[in-house]
Picture (cartoon, rainbow, N blue to C red):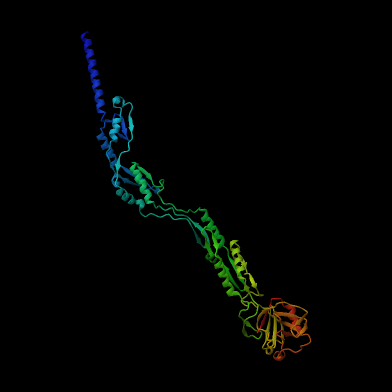
Length: 456
């Protein structure tokens, strides 16, 4: 073998030994260091030892910051120091190094490796809680409020809800705690549904229905006509009668409505009541008793009122009457009536305010217990001709106008020709009002059933 050939072979052996030395040195080195091209959670770890990487991780965690996205584009941040976040060394880094294919270390540059690792950390729960509570977003919070029905100027409307910016503290703590534990760098309190929400919104069907129902009820205005007086049932009064049930629907308080109608009756019923009356001679007297006047049929009036409100029927109406007169004014006698003055034995008949009859009469004999009863009565009926019958008599008359049972106004045929004076005290009737024929005729032809007859 030539000398030159030996030299070449020697050089090759030396080179091979060097390569093998480098290879085995690399294999030994990368048994405790990261291969070239290694990346751990964004950190360049090439040629780094476990200790180096542990320090890098600790430094990264020490600079940890959690961005908190809040309502209205506001942002805040919590740092590792705020929550007492610290890195806890474990075998994770060593395990990553040991899992490397160190025998092929020389090829790693061409095929870089990226590793992920959940670094073991610990934090101070108390500090985290205090830091969260100290966030600006927890200061001056506005609580959410539900939409509700309100009234203005007699109209009901839905007041919109208030979203507010109040946070659910427990939910925020949970979201922040989870983010810190998983090393997350950002959370969104809106997306995480940490803000408290109203329970009822302005488009709530029940709320809209409630406002519509209230408006239907309270926009009704009913005028009760009492002649020269009036009583009004309006939204304010109806509002006091509304009762909200457990199902959320409104109904009318019939007891309250019945009380209202009762008060109407107490104020306006006149049947058999006391009245002030100005006589034909100009005297003001007080009358009481009789069957003339108005009586409100209370139960039926309540039912009609309830139906009118429920159906949204505004307008002028009268109560339902059990008994009624001819005039609904304060003076319910009106200007067409018969006036019988017992003490002066006179009778007057006014029609539409004009005096048609001014006549002497003979009334019942009080000394025989047949006195003509005082009071204000309604004319019961009219009959012509008629036969008046009693226990011991039967009399033919042309005009018969009863107003209190068997007591009435009538002419006297031929059995009585004198009237007035004190005749009634000795030769009075059985209670009827004996009237001259012409006067009886005039009254009969001008009076209507139900018209008032005042006896005093």
